[in-house]
Amino acid sequence: MHFRNVTREAVSRLNDRPETSAGLSVKMSEYLARYRPRLRFGFVLKALLWLVLPTLASSAFARELLTFDGSLKEQFTPLSKSRLEAWSPDEAKINNIAPMPRGRAVRVTAPAGGGFVTNADVVAVEWNKVESLGLWLHRSAAEAKEHPTVELEVRLIEADRKAYFWRRIEIAHVGWQKLLLPLDWFVWSDGRIPCWDNVKYIGFRLRDEGAFTLDTIWTEQASDARTEFVPTDLLARVAFPKQLFHGAEDKPVETNSLRTLETRDVQLLTNAKSLDLERLAAHCGMIAKQVREELPFLTEPRSGSQLIIFEESAEYRRFITRHARQLKVLVNVPDTPGFTFQGVSSSFWDAELGTLRPVFAHEFLHGYLSRTTRFPCHGEWLHEGLATYFQLKFHPQANLDQLVRDGLSSPKKHVTLKELCNGQHISLTQYWQAGTLCQMLLTEPNYRSKLATLFQRLEGASSTDLGPHLEAAWQTDWEMLTADWRAFCERQFPKK
Image 1 (cartoon, rainbow, N blue to C red):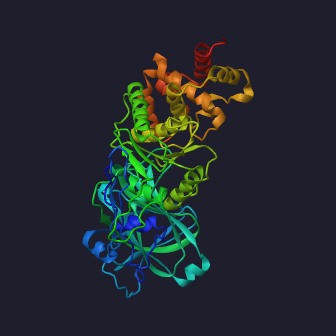
Image 2 (cartoon, helix red, strand yellow):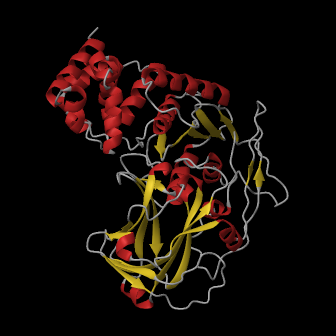
Image 3 (cartoon, rainbow, N blue to C red):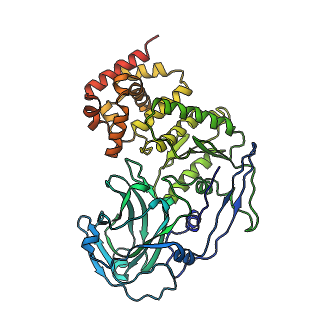
């Protein structure tokens, strides 16, 4: 597997340290480690992590974006009920040669949901070449007393404002504080996966009522171009913290339990001893080929989807919690044997089901679709329907015919297509509906011919809600679509 270097900010995030390092108290000691898992088939994984003095890196690679010295009205648009004021920071004795608060700052006072967004052309950045975003935050003692802790979202917003990357910040300090936010751990907005190439605005949105002062926003350059997906070497540290990076600084750690394999279509990472990586990778490749054949208009992914297989189910569930913590989001640990979040798919080993366990295929499909479309996996009808449809091509379900017939015959066992396809999360009991609907859309000529148009419209709307596109895509409505779907199911799954 080809891993890129991991920089100091990513390392500090993965140590679960606070994201804020208050200019006066930056920790300067971190471990430097290497790991080199041995693979049965001669495939070697190396990751070298460097942590350098933050002030030196900041001075060498920092680029100031905003210092708030110009007209606030020309630079920013306040959100609803938000007040922006020019503010001159007090002289601060901060021993740091990074970009520093100076000149004027902007003081923001707003209710929950308030804040501001930069105006067009205020910020021009090649975000795919940025490692981290830096900024200075200030709060007075009076502000901290009135609102002891407030949450703030930093948003990097696409030009059409329908998709963005975001990062949650908890503000609980007094005085100046420097933050360095690694872009690897920003979260996608709902509806459509944002693209770094399309980011044009920076936004700040309070989740709670409060006030803060902001000054000197800057970026730090990345050593390699980034994508919208977290590099697999960083995920490895989150997934397997006990199996990596425990050697002395001058001795790389070697482990026989952690193995990885990267192909065109998949990046596999596992500590499951009995998993046949080559066989699973080939299987994923066959599934990806089928997807490309039936959906030829999809984007060719720049790298394979990430699929992590754990030896134990408890490890799988702990990873989901740690992954969410790195992203500073709340995620309910699922009861299901597979989960995909932010394009990262995971599951665990089952000796009875073996290397070609059906859930591996299902979660791989979610990851692959996240890279070939701009639809994040939130458990809505399109992701679950396509994953179910293609999974069943390679892992047929013996009782599927009866399941579909029973579902059609009982109003209690299905929902209306309008409810199913509203872009919201669907239940496991509705997968058969989503799967058969997607099967119809992919195989019936009058629907298949307009699929590319439908995908473009859904991406443009930043939602997989099907309702607004029925007339434009197929000159139909819910009643006619439902009639066609029921007739399709009766033909495809007849009584025997």
